[in-house]
Length: 167
View (cartoon, rainbow, N blue to C red):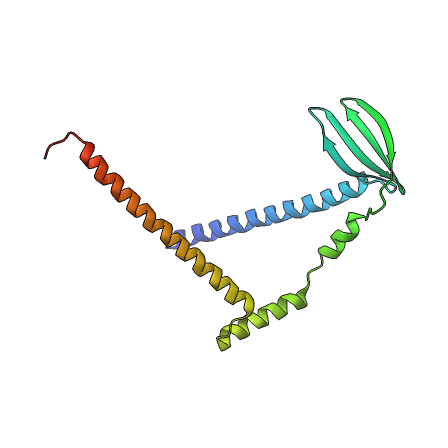
């Protein structure tokens, strides 16, 4: 019994050590990736968009300070195409920062409303609409199953008539 207990403890320690190593590898990767991204990003130059045209051919829209230029790359060649004027350009990083914030108040309100409706047995408009849609889908599905059953039954009868086997 003592030997079995020590094997169990060793197994648990092994799993714990393996999990700790995976966690440290994950954290290290995140830190290194963050530093590499910051190191590669220029202060005044940014690639806004890239379009692939073929195997080694691409067009890049590059933002240099407040100006936009279009360049083409092919293999080891880079060619300036033209200056571009974008009137309604907004920096996507500003939108990402706004969209990445978690709205806890909205989540909490939704959770409270859901629990309140479940407790009182009330249904809000979206749940009523969802139930109507689900009922329509169920009716349609059962109708298709009924048709399938009818056709497969007729098919079986015709197959039985066409066989040359005698009972």
